[in-house]
Image (cartoon, rainbow, N blue to C red; front, top):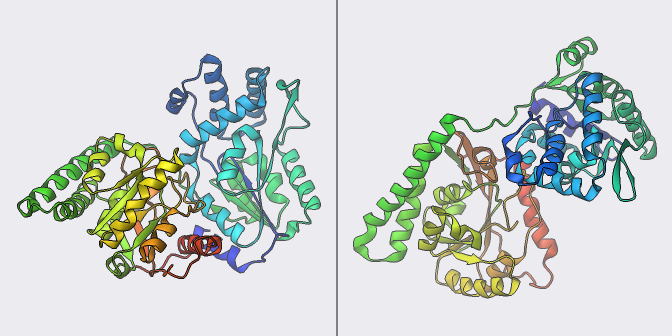
Length: 476
C-alpha cells in the first residue's frame, strides 16, 4: 500500500472519536539514532548531562529483541537514577528542538494529520519514556501518550519503572485498557508499528499497518495480509549537499551583486533592490538545482500592495518568496537575522523591518512605519506564526500582520509553501536538491474586520493554510 492509498482509506472510512489511530514511536513516527550522535555535542552539558542525553537519544530506534530492551532499561535506570524528572524533561525538549524533529517521518506526520482531521482518537504508544516521547507528541498534536513510566521518590528518579514497562504484550494491553476507558471500537481502529515486539499491538485492531517492517514483522504481515507502508527517513547532509550549498551561496551573492550593478546607473534604490532580489533568486535556484512549482501565480502579481502571509519552515523560504514575488516588496523579520552574514545585509538593502520579539513595546514601534510603506505602494511579506515551525504543522497566527493590513487598507494574500523544510531543515543552512511547491491563494479583504474582535477571522485564514497543505491544488 502506498501513502495515497492509506490516506484515501482514512478519508473514506469511519469517522469520529470511537476510531483510534495508535502509532508506535521509534521506527514508526521517528527514525532511530546511532550512538555518539554529533548533535549531542551541541547540548554543552557536563559529563553527566552527556550521559543523560545519550541514553535519551540513542534508544529512540526502538528495541527489536527482549535482550535489547532489557539492556535499554538497565542502562537508563542506572544513568537516570538520582536525577530529577524536570532535568530529563528539559534535556528531552532540547534534543527534540535540536535533533529529533528532523527525523520525524514526513509520511507519519501526514497520516497523523489525516486521522486527526477524521476526528479519530490519536494515540502514541511506546515502550520508551515520556522524556523521549512527549515533545514529539506535543508538536504533532497528539493528546494521548502511553509509555513506560519511571518511578520517582523524593523528587528524583529511583532507577525503577512505575508499573510494568510497555513492552510487547503489555503495550497491547495498555492500548486495550485505553480503548475501554475511552469507548474506542478496536475493530474500526488503526495501529502502525515496525518491529516484531509490536505484533500483539497490530493484532488488537481491525486495521493493522506494518511500517518499514523488520524481517519477522514483514513475515507476519504477509501471513496476515496486513498492508505495508514504507517511510523514507530524512537523510543527513552528504558531501554533494555541502557542495551544492556553497555553490548556491556563491550564486546568491553574485546574483545579488549583478542585480544591483545592472540598475546602479538609475541611482534608484528601489529599482536596485528589486533587481537584487530577482537576480539573486534566479541564481540561487539555478546553482542549487531546486525547482519552484507555483499555482495561483496571478495573485502574486495583483493586487499590489498587499500583506503576503507565508508559513515559515526554512531559511530557504526567503529564496522561494523572492522567486514568487520578484519585486515591489519588503519583509518583517526578527532582529536576530541581522547577524546572518548573507541574509542580514541583503535584507537591510531590501528595506526590511527588523523587530526585537523579546521587546513588545519596541516591536510595535518598529511596525508603525510599515503602514506608510504599504500606503506608498510597497508590499510586505510576514510569517504570521512568528518563527520557523519544527514540522509542516501550521502554528498559531499572531495578529500583527492583520492589524497592519487593516491600518494600511490593503488585503492579505496567503502564500502556502510545501517542502521547503525538506530542502533546508529548520536549523540548517544546508540545501538539498528537490522541488518546493507554492500555492498563492486569492486575496482576502480585511477592510471590514474589527481589530478588537478578529480571532475567528484569523483562525479562518490559518485554516486555509491547513486545508491547502492537506488538499494541494493543481499546478498552473
